[in-house]
Image 1: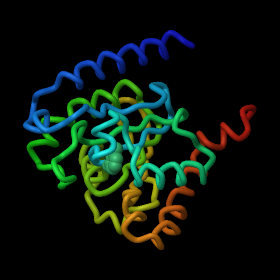
Image 2 (image 1 turned 180 degrees about the horizontal axis):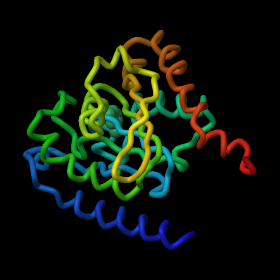
Image 3 (image 1 turned 90 degrees about the horizontal axis):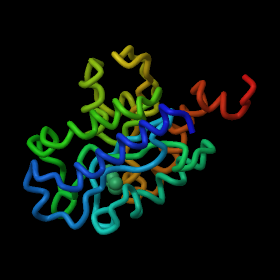
Image 4 (image 1 turned 135 degrees about the horizontal axis):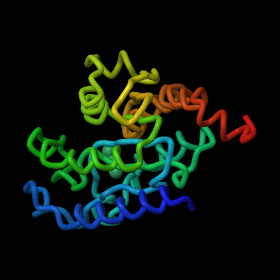
Length: 206
Ligand code: URA
């Protein structure tokens, strides 16, 4: 493990502790566990979802319910596993009854997400669903458009931490409500095959 990798792991571990004690919005009163995120702190690809649901709130891990099963299937379709990526959410605590995040909750919480992006510094960010997509487009100064126009595309941006590609995607939960949508999600996910990162992984000598 390189020094930079150890450093990233340490910073992510400290951030997890801060999130565990967070009381910046009322969601701390109703949560069971915080769901900070998990995966490789040195990953080239980060995925950002919306907010923990009931299973995530109980286990403290992202995407462990039915949407998580869909997400694992999408990852497997491009030969990726969870230990090769970093996975987190816009909100680190569950909104009651899985309602949409409120503006104030997002504002209170995204400082942690911003730090995760800064520490992991992935080259590719996959945004799962509307909330993550709109937040990341705005953060990187990309003009807002409907997710239906963007899903499955790859947007190149220059950031203060170097070039990045943003990949807006529909939320995996869509396939739990409308099972036929899995084909669209699988098709959109193939964009990760085009990334130079996957190409490098398939051919380490490249
Ligand atoms: N589980 C998560 O962790 N995030 C979501 O956005 C949905 C389910």
